[in-house]
Image 1 (tube, helix red, strand yellow):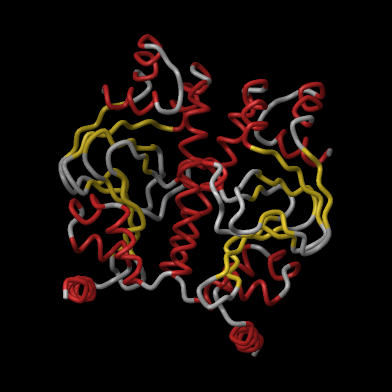
Image 2 (cartoon, chains in turn red, blue; image 1 turned 90 degrees about the vertical axis):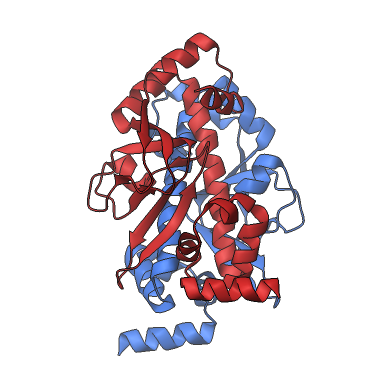
Length: 190
Length: 190
């Protein structure tokens, strides 16, 4: 869990004793590729922090196709924030893209953590602030860029995205068919 | 500023004395319609809380058209979060849609506020959490809905949106031409 401590150190100051206490609020979960953390129609009970591996969030659209809206790699959080805060049923699924190690926390345990370690309010404030800033920019790109430009943009900004994520999931994230993604890649290579 | 106190009370517990102190960190700004709070190319120095009125955030696209990405009415915050946190130049503009009263805070003053009133970490954590939750859903809608469905969705979910926002700005937000918006409205009425 040294990587989680290093991650927290970027945002807040805590000593080893505090860190040990903070860690007791989380459950360490090791899962295989394709493990489902949450299936649509279930209450969204937890938030997930990726220690190692990669998770994705998706929904099944009207045509029955999985549409990926988010990936989380090391040091990223993932959940359906709206459903989590309200403990509602989610209409998203969360699944492991790779074999992964994850820290899981549920809402009431998170509230306890925040009561016992108020410094974690600052941590989560900064995490949500960054997540919101990223989504503001993403919404702008969705207005501004063609799908081809989006692909080039993500490839340039996030090389891990192209290296780690299977092609059919990249297509699902960008709203392409896998065939259209192949066409774009061929066009960019030529 | 009673409405700001009532707004804070939804998230945190503070007494009148604390509220009076918190308020001293903000600058009250009264502006006319079309006032520019921030112009693209300028450092994004502040966050804005709408006490009364309506603000919007937009960028100018390649064709020279204003593309609105966000509106803020009473009790909403607006800024370019990414540029604000880093004190970078913004590539967005923030403008008053109506005559407005706004609370403004800059980054170093906000940090002082958070040091003096750590309870405000919790407040901002919850604000960003909700903002992020809303943007997660908005990104899903951008994948899932046609432009016509988006219009119906926003009209139903946010009646104020249709009542208060001028038509050409609704068109700019939904990525329509004003002519296309008129067509949709005519179609929906028939």
